[in-house]
Amino acid sequence: MVHVDDRRLAVEDSGTGFPILVQSGFGSRHLFPGAVRDANRAGLRLISYDRPGLGQSDPQPGRKVADSISDVMAIVDTLEIDRLAVWGSSGGGPYAVAAAAGLGDVVTSVGLFSPIGPYGTPQLDFTEGMGVDADFHDEIAELLQDPMTARAGFMERARDMLASQGFPDSWLRRWGDLAGKDAAHSVEWAEYLAACAVDGFGADGEGWWEDWCATFLPWGLDLTQVKAPVSLWHGMQDEMVPQAHARWYASHLSDVDLHLLPDIDHTNIDENLRSTALQWFAQYAT
Image 1 (cartoon, rainbow, N blue to C red):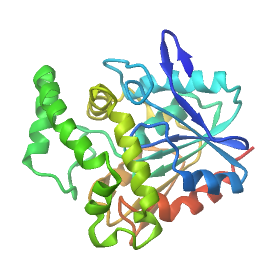
Image 2: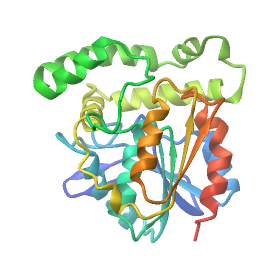
Image 3: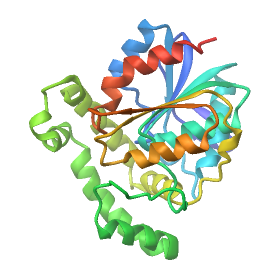
Image 4: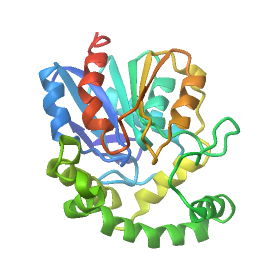
């Protein structure tokens, strides 16, 4: 447990080697076992934490993405880390970028897998290519206009989300014919994702609500402060976070390599590109 003022953060640390702070889409401290195995073989050390209100971390009502900078600073100080890389996937992408923006003297490199972009910015059509319906737009509008009503509706949906994401079998059913056919849709991945969902929901879903708000409300970040090299991998088949989000990051970061991959989607990018990302991180492990 790491202390940030009067709050506690639950941190998972995989061992020794050059540290990489992992920011997952679920906001969970849990590290995928396969990633830990590969990282250890490469001499790299994966670290993650439960974002506020998720898992075993205390809540931080009203938090912004930029507030996570203080959390990362506390983790770095407690673990006595001088230099580290950051790795963000999906909804964890903004948090990885935040760490690089706020800890420029500590962060050596930034790896991004299908990162979600900011909502409401004129340079990004947030839902272009995204498989959502009109209800999604209504939910975001309600969040912006009537947060208390939006919270009540979100909590009802969150219980359904937990039922559909909190069991390994539910992930296998979601993947359909792909389930069990390759490493990206394995039982190990299904068990990991279910554990993240259960731990993330917690006792009442409050942490999911905090993360939802932080994603769609202003982040409070200045991306011009990101000086570390960035490598961004994004699947061209991704309908959950379409490639327009990747292009937005590429146009707002000063030192970024964008890789758009034709046979990659949101369900297989972490597994299929993990080795490539670890090799890239190793270049900056000094």
